[in-house]
Amino acid sequence: MTPADGRIGPVLRLAPAKLNLTLAVIGQRPDGYHALHSVMVPLGLADMLSAAPWPGAVDTLHVAGRDAGPVADNLVLKAATALRRAVVSLHPLQPAPPALAFRLEKRIPVAAGLGGGSSDAAATLEIAVEAWQAEVPPAVLQAVAASVGSDVPFFLAGGAALVEGRGERVAPLPPLRGGAAPGVLLLTPAVPLPTPDVFAAYAGGARPEAPGAARSTSEHLAGELQRGIDAQTLLTRAAVLASANDLLEAAIAVLPGLRELRRGLSRLLGRPVGLAGSGPTQWVLYASEADAAAAAASVQAALGDGRLESPGGKGASVVATCIGAVPAGAAALEDRGGRYLG
Ligand code: C5P
Image (cartoon, rainbow, N blue to C red; front, top):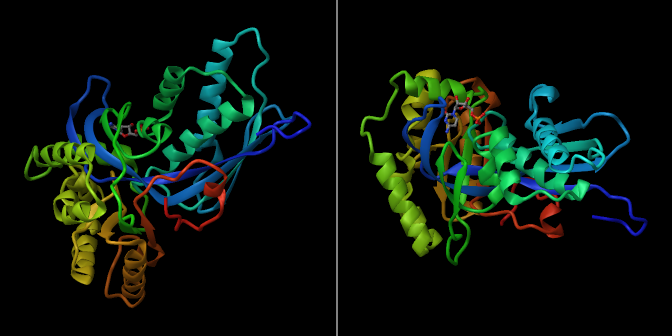
């Protein structure tokens, strides 16, 4: 984005949430992380990040929308710092890239299992490369992404993918064929569930009743997507996908109220309820975003009148969105309030 006078203008990106349609834990690695097999898709719900070079000495970040916690801990600043370090070591004779002033419009619930912070980090890397007009080989960018967080390489690749290893092995999958994008209802309790706590509970023995089931579902789905399936076929798999998350028992061990919430949601909606990543967000699939929005209204009403109880009380967030990549380009930067159809 270089205006006519040669200055670099503001650079913008949408940073989509993600859904793990499957999440199988394959084992524990020597580095303490867990090896995964997970089919991940981006969602229409997205944060918006922009940045412009500024004459200050350090990068700055202003966050609007949802509370994302202390700015100093934000992955946007960590990703910018990690990339600057990489650029300086790639091009030691050139001046260090200038400081950037970031503005983040936060719409994705925080510490919710939806990958919002990691997506912001991936968007930061793309923005910084553009704003600095830096030459960074793809392998270096991927290594920087993995160093910032396990989900960041998935977001950097963009689109649906089979994710393996700790998260650094990302094999793109084709998008769903034809038809409307499936709708997704997301219910996020007003209690953050830190990912390390959930993996620690898993390592401590909170394991699925049927070991290996999530992995075989995950391998089957990855194969189907590779060959090409439509949205309708994916919807017929909702029940098996909703049970294909090896972190479910661990998430419930850390936040026991999730079990009752899941029962209440499936009674209310009559559909399978899945856990998003390490939680605490619950997801339910629909044929369209409009159907998900209708269900979201009934979930809001049930939370309001006490028919549905969520851990953390009434501050739960209810969002209707859809499965779908956010396309690159100016049109994607319009504010569509988290209901963007990719
Ligand atoms: O990489 P990231 O900082 O997102 O991971 C957060 C935590 O989740 C890690 O510190 C680790 O405890 C756990 N984790 C894991 N295996 C993974 C990803 C995350 O054990 N594949």
